[in-house]
Structure formats: structure tokens, C-alpha cells
Image (cartoon, rainbow, N blue to C red):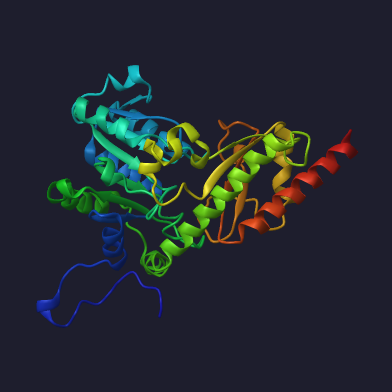
Length: 352
């Protein structure tokens, strides 16, 4: 095998047809015609170019999407709205209501059924960034999404070795939207490389195995941390950690399996959660104390990462650590966190 950007056509003219294996696999997995892009932000940009709204409602989440909106605002006057009730009332037909769930960097979930009701009432399109909960965790199409976006760099890639963005279109829009998206992708220049396509095919073979394990481990870790804070406020965890945030801890929304969150995420609550420490300096120092966790940005690979998020997003709470759980045993990751908290406590004593 060798890398190439040019491929010879089939010698049989009756078998000439365009094809992309990873797009076909994603179409099957996501439940709607899917196109790949060179990155998640490239996919988000392509989506907004295609839908061409006058207004886009977007809340907290990945700061890169807000950067794309600022560029489009400079070019065509696109107006950015918040996701509060008053702002959503400003939406009109053809506008975009964009919801990221679960959220980056906290792993919190948002109620898609609520936002779908708003979008339908206003004649807007509901677009969902589902990067943090890929199949089999949730299916935004089942909850009314018109377009589902993924940064495929994360869980579709799954091995920290490829860049990829994905747009999946609800089948009801396929005939009208997909040909235009395909053509516009060529002109915008956001086509994913052939090497990344091959890596994507490789990765999709283990998607379900990886994501289910990562989600279970993240849920176990988040719940353990939350319990430790309450059980022993002066202990190794409780003395350092202020709060843990994850969809699995949204108890009112879960309602013992009867709430909207249990219905929205039947396959699990996502492999990413956030730890907020009591002291910003501790948050800056803790990642370097880990043995199994790597201090790095991005996420979704088989290795566990912990990031002082302020390094990548200056608007983020300086006390926040984003945790991306890999496929290691959750008990080993728990022990790694405990030794990190203890080492941090010893270091603080020496500094005093």
C-alpha cells in the first residue's frame, strides 16, 4: 500500500461510479446520508454555508464553532443568538438552532426534544453537534435533528491519528441537500485526505466496542468522584475537588430512567467529563502528576487524557480539568487520580 491523491478508474466503463467507503459506513451507522470533511470545523463551516441562515442560535460548547460564526458574520452579517428563551424567540424560518450535546468541555447533556419543539415552531433547522456521544450512545435524528455533525477526529477516528469532520443529513432532506453539499465541499476545499479515509474505515470497525467501554468507565469515574466529595470532604479527593460535571450526574433529568435524558442517551452518557478543583493553581499542576492520564488536548482516542482546559480555551474556568476516558480499566484510572491528588497535596504542603 502507498499514499496517493490520484486513482486510476475501473477499466470497465459500466462500473465507473464515485465511491467513498468511509462515507458509506458512516451513512449506515448514523442513519442518514453522510459526508466527510477535513476537520470538524470544516464540516461546521460547510453546514452554515449550505443552509445560509440569517441567524444562528448557539450556546456554550466548543469555542471553534463560535470562531467560524464570527468569520461568517464579517462576510455576510450572520447574527449570533444565545439559547435562552428570549433569544430563541428571534429565530425565523430558515435560521439555524445549533445544539451541542453533550457539551465540550463538561460532558453535560441538553434536552434535544425541547429545542426541536422550538425549531419546528419557528421554522428553523435543528442542527446537532453529537461529537461527545457518537453511536451507540444517542441518535439525534430520532429526536428531530435535521443535520448531525461530528468531529470525526475524536471517536470515529478513535486512535489520535487522523483529522475528520462529518455531516449526516436527515433522510427527508437527502435529495435536496446532499448533492449541493457534495458540490460545495469540492469548491470550499474541505475534502478529507485518502489516508484519513483508510484510517477511518479501520477505526469504524471498533467504534461500538471503544465507545461503550469508554462511556461506562467515564460514568464510573464521575460517580465515584462525586461520591468521594460528599463522603469525605477532607479526604484526598474532597479536599481538592469542588465539583464533578457529567451527564450521568444530571439526576433530575434522569429521573430514575424516566426522564428525558435517559430516553435521549439510552446507550450511555459519554466518555468525557469535567472536574472543577477548588484552586486554579492546583488545576494547572494536577495533570503533570498523572501516570496513566496524558496531559493533552483533543480526545476520543484509546488513551485517557486530562487537560487543564484554560490552555486551549482562555474563556474557560481556570479551575476546570477536562477528562477524556480511554479504554484502560476504570479502577486503574481511579487509582491514578487518587495518587495525583495525594501528590498534589504533598506538594502544596512544601510550598506553604
